Image (cartoon, rainbow, N blue to C red):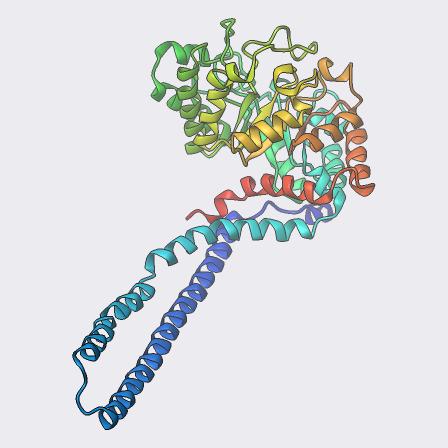
Length: 457
């Protein structure tokens, strides 16, 4: 790459500088809040004093007038005057309660941190073009991004693609990872080519045959092996180890842990006991979080009782909502409470939830009504990979991308044809099929996760 080209490559964002800038904004906002509260308190005291003086002067004038007209007050009048005087301390107490506001100020400051992050993200989104916004809702493999096969380096193809489509993230698999040096160079180059922060993702849940197995990494356990020990600290430690070597190699997002309550004893699960799976999932999220890795729990609403392979065919589960609430949905609720950053929705159908055979990844009843509204999840919702046969044999890439976003997904993973899907979403916003505010809301969730650490000390 020539020196001129190097100069045109945007450098990675200096997060330390961002943190200093955000903390300065927070301090300025806190000072303004403090001065406003002080002014309010002084104003209350001043107004109280003013009216207190007027009341006292009014009482003096009334007393003098009454003495001129009626020299000797009756016993009843003495009682009335005593009752008026006795109310004065209560008025003073009420004034003192108005003055005491340190706890309220602290609550305002805590809320302002989240508000500041939202304000920062919204301001950035306002400056983006529609095309940049839409691109930010996709996570692609390097092969889908470049149109090339078996990508192991980020060259001109990656650079040109990211300049045109600043996507939200890229996901690597075993075929892309050959050595630590090769991986680091590829990831560093990819990040430098994109003008916005990216998710650098991999699906890694432990064991000797994972996507990172070609590297010399510390031995880890599968979820099934972790569950056999029956200790939540083992889950935390195992995923903390996974998180640490992901960070060391340039990743910031793990498509893990698997939160399915498996009835068939599958190896990619913590087992068939919903309570135990819930505990293990929450601990795994904590381990990744401590290492500095975003977690993506999968596959909502739980495919442990699904009949068939959701990646190869339109599989389904006949479980009722009541049954799921007592089993499959428990680990996902635990994941939400543990602060998972992302939840992946599966392609299988759940007719008892959707009242049709629509895949959950395209269902408003599943993503918006159940996950978002009923379960209270406000993080990122992402679909499973859209290039699998269970989707492609029924839906075109443009149709499925628009359907997923309208149903409540925030991000789309690996469409069969990215160009077709991208163009369809842009057109849907332009013709009013999708409200642009809907795109902004999803992108806001995405960037609030990406910039979350800017408000941390």
